[in-house]
Amino acid sequence: MLIPHTYFFKIILSFNINHHIYTTGISIFYNQNRIWSLGHFKNTLYVNPHYYGDIKIKNKNNRTKFFLPSNGGRNYKNLLLAAEKLKKENLDFEVIVIGRGRPFSKKVLSEKLKNNFIFKFNVKFEDLYEGVYTSDYIIINLYPHYKYNDIFRKNRITGASQLSFGFYKPVLIHKSFAEFYNRSSENSFIFDNSNFYETMRKAILLNVQEYKEMQKNHIKLSDSLYKLSLNNIKKTLNSILLE
Image 1 (spheres, rainbow, N blue to C red):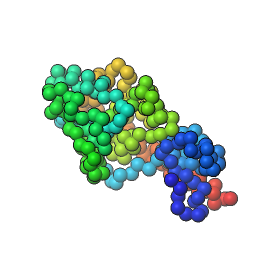
Image 2: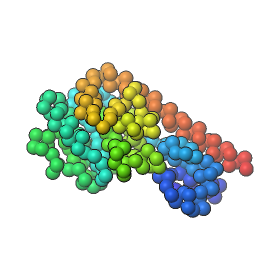
Image 3: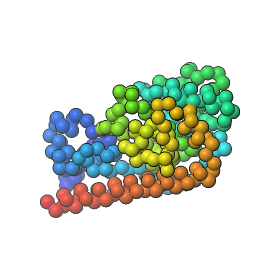
Image 4: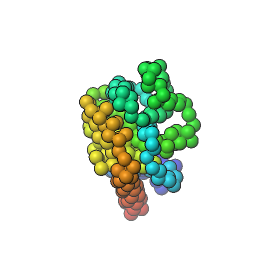
């Protein structure tokens, strides 16, 4: 997106670094580090605005709530297998599924899981934000062995991460994507290909005080990335003004 002012025509803000950068005239901005991006992409400056208003920090729900964006090209099998096991343990949890499409819907649920999933499609942004705010965790449902998912650690950012930064929600994220999204065991739950059930279980069983501590760490992360973004904006503008 070009910033609509003659003076700032030398800056590009992008959430998706793709081949168009290299094959068009704007590649000069790439080579000069004058592309702002939402991710830590090569030869770009990290500028990540994730302010959704003055968010009031809330305690962990008695019934643990997970927020899950519904998108195509994602793996829902591990989530369903984990949910079945958690249900057998009589653990109290809820998964709020919100999206524009219906690649994952109530049709794929067993009868006993239907009370644990809430599906909302084509909702307004206000309803989307309410779903995030009332949840305890956000599931970033990316796996390295899914070819389509790989772009989300190379040249594109997932919106779920943006929401977690803005609403200070710890995430569940695969270890292959954790570093790219600045996640660690201090502020999130990291899983691999074989332990998603165990990860969800730990998140559910986390007590209120432990959750507050993880949330504090997530707030520190979010604030530090925001400060980094502001510093990078200043750096770019100062270099332009000196020309």
